Length: 215
Image (cartoon, rainbow, N blue to C red; front, side):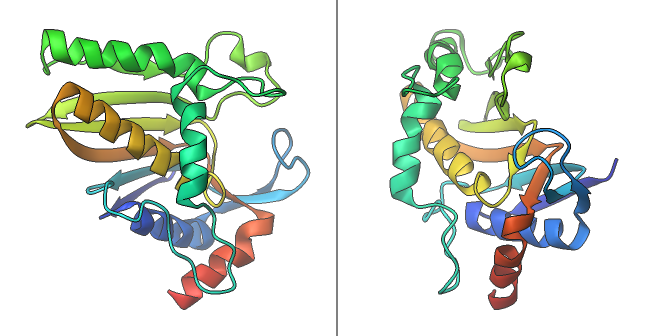
């Protein structure tokens, strides 16, 4: 398995560097099961993305004129309840928030009442029944660490759409991190994201190339 390590200053740079890596080195294959089954995608075997200053604004990437933006802050803000609360809209199989809502408050309580030096402040997404869903959760964990007064996240996606998912997911997760840091009373820290399925669907290959060419 080839491990791709991407180090970036902020979320926008992380997205751009991942686009470059996926286009240049992504393994191309036809999808047997899952979203867009029967179509192709380019995928990195295992990607580890370290973002040193994820709170740098803007949180969503800017794209060249003529290229549809992969996300907007308006969308990210509307996405936050899906990440942080258990409310489900009609037709939704699940939300990340149905798994995370209680854990978010417990992690905040843990750090505030018991101190910062612990490895137990871990939040899981999904359960033993998730495997039976038509589309199981992509985000599977948010692990946390407070070091030198800064809250950092380590997140894992089992499968991760680099074009349509990455920008919105990480912007929302960063807002969650900032909220939790404020509730705990510490500063905002790094964001490390991992996936053994960071990919670009075939429809987005030319969009990604357009961003890379202009940039």
